Image 1: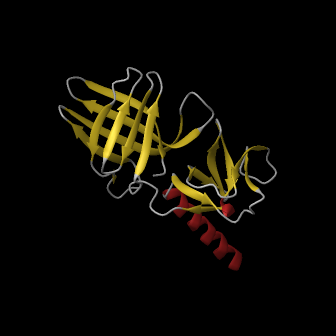
Image 2: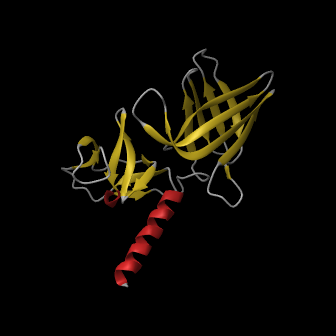
Image 3: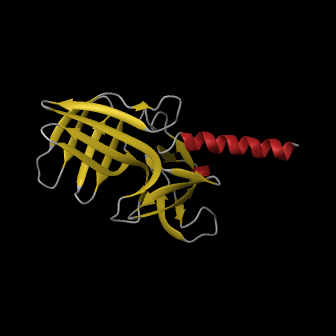
Length: 199
């Protein structure tokens, strides 16, 4: 009976963490002369593909499996033990204050301050600035999220959904897909991934 109750508590905690991802975490509980290993699979015996510093801050965790969190290191994605990762409060959507969406073919990047400015960059070099509202979650659901913004003569809408997303250029994986719709003289639709950023 006790084992069953503990298993239920662990499953509930894991579900609660998953609903609040992606989010930013700090590495904690690692000795100052050590590092937190990032492995190919969510298990202690898996190969090490990278490390996080003992005092690393604002590490984005995009999903959790068996108390291991998926993080990006260098140009790859791997798993770090959640025992050594402490969540920063209010860094998951819709409360996250800063996030970035991006895509390829064509390359584009949208740097967003939730409720503040946003800048859309493209290879043409003509950055476009917008003022954004606050992100909102779908009614009675944990996702998707939407945020609206505007500039003179142009409106922007961003819709982000919780799903593992590849940038198509590296082995990094992100926890949000993103679609950006621009409506001015012409309508543009951009598709890619989104990532929670530190301040």
